[in-house]
Length: 580
Image 1 (tube, rainbow, N blue to C red):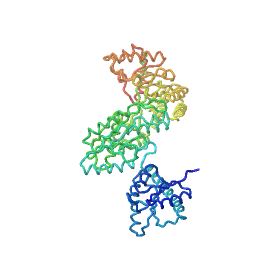
Image 2: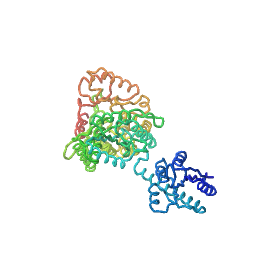
Image 3: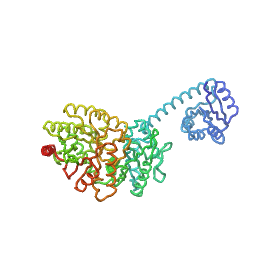
Image 4: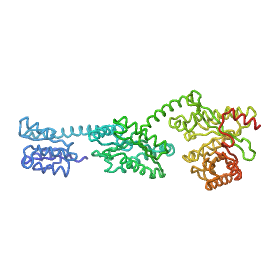
């Protein structure tokens, strides 16, 4: 059974209190008594009653003052108060409602009706409180992020408007920081969305803990986090700092946030290192209104990310011009595939022993209608960000297979043609089926196609990489690990993968003659690869000294300007014909 509802009776007349007590107790209510307003308030501090019957005229503190003070108590605003008065003038009624009374009744009291009146008020109060709670929940959902509990974009922008208005009146500065987590998508893809959600909650809490009172971030009463932090979607957070002396104050806070986010976090018993990139725009220098500040902070954040991630970047006005160039580049890139503007160039791989062409690496170029030939370092990262990298990679594989088939049909032997894939393409579920289809359509023999990936791509999801590599190996397609020596693959991983070759990164080859450490690294890579029965290809060979050193260490193949720059298919056809 539910406990009886509690009614507090506040009346200085003992006889009146006894009558009220008896009438309410017979009706099944628990009754508490108080002889004046002060005693009534103390009783409510000790325990909130479900309803208060309050006499108006009392010594020490009258009912009007006591009702007004009761409304200030925690939870007191939701308690129904029934004022009792022998006064019949409208002024007293108005004063009762102004003091916060829910209703009033006049003396003498009709005792038979009193319990019904109390029950009606309790039911009405419960219904109103339910409505208020629902409204509060709706308000919370409209203004707070359900995952992290932080303010959302809508509430944050409202507060940013207020902060800018205050700063304008006082002649102060405001800093706006866009924070984007580095490599968050990789965590979602490898550990799942539940892990991603847990990480976002951890990041939100860590950002909140990293803010200090001296950072001039106010707190809204009852709010768990500083009001100047919000999650605005995905893995993006935003921070507002007010009452600043200058950009150095903002930089100090931003560096503390970066340091906090760089610390490892344990998610699903896995230690993760996330890090973030932060872009900062300052009011009034980088924008006098909310929209401009948001846009410029976002632009600065993308510039920080492009600079190597884990970085802080303040906005400068030259970024807008670069941002416009970026938009033009994105639009042109989306049209490029449809308009057949991509071409493949090929850099021959040369066998050390025979001196003959033993294969080629297919390298994509963009034949821009206005800019001419655009190298991949200027558009590949953009293609990844706008979701174009998979269709571009599929086109490159298809074109390389068609060209390889054409060479073979002409009686030429190009060896395996290698195509570089991005990480997202390597994880694409249709990759193996596409490769199988291309080999069949072009009647290509086994081992005529290689796929080049970096160490970091393989280690992002080792089990998936092994599965995909083995499926490709069954088709005769091997993996070549590009830029080897700059990543963090393990010997165990190398043994489990059907790898065709390791490609030594050009940075090690470049300084072979002058850097003993690089020479030792190259020697060790070659020895290790041969122990694992893997072919070794040196990239970036430009001098006879480099070639001689690599040959002496038993390197299998090389590619670089010493033999040939990347050339178009027709030029490579000429080299293959000469070789034949």
